[in-house]
Image (cartoon, rainbow, N blue to C red):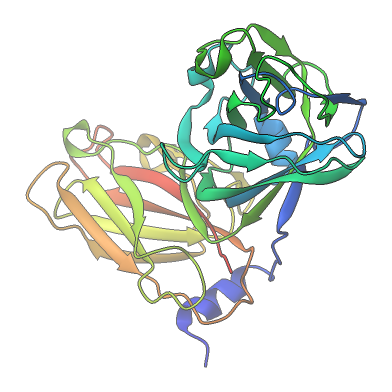
Length: 356
């Protein structure tokens, strides 16, 4: 028997099966070989892919679990590198020459598992046009579905016994126009350098492995009593099959107010009205509905004053994989006569991908 949640979701959208890998850049222009970074001397290196590239190749939040680099020639080998690899959500366009500035949010150490751990990465033999070098993530990374992406590599030893001598280990590198793919590195400064001495409008072709089952915030709320903006978060795990504890949480809201939870299959259109949409029709200037309200639920916030109100709504997920890859969106509205507009406050939205 279907749960009410499953019945409602199936009524909103057809089942979508999530792909499990995607490739960056998402199309080929001019391919060449380049041995930076893995064939170089100790180096601090970043490759950045724009938000538009991520939208074309993936287009939604995801949990990334592995990166594979395409190699350019056959039969090149190298030693066992000592390196650290990080990944982060980054700026949408035009990365900075300062490495730290490009690691905007969600920075995750993916190799090794923790600082001070084993940095060893054996280089596998190259093969022309194959994703021959794999780096499984020792810590899962959450991509937010809307930012650029940056991979940060710090090579401490190139594994040859001759650390100041580069060697041939060519990656397939794509040259694009401005601000699609950018490579930044500083060989002379070594792995601890803070800024790039070389910035190129090109970067390696990579394949990323991902899984669904993720919730990330999007958009902005508007303040209620006390000029405090309510926050929509989650608890009880991810939107995956047979999770009885998947819970939508409202915090920092005005207390003792009516709260309306909205669930919808779109964040761009509401019966022909483009989203986000400002609620000027009801006098709620400055407040935006971010989600098409296909389903709603109302409840009272509890708490002891301005910004202390909270509410929760648990929506158990069904024990089925039929919904894998389906996107849906949620938001809270709070009726609040003490808000700046005298009508309501609103939270940020949450973007959910049902996972395996």
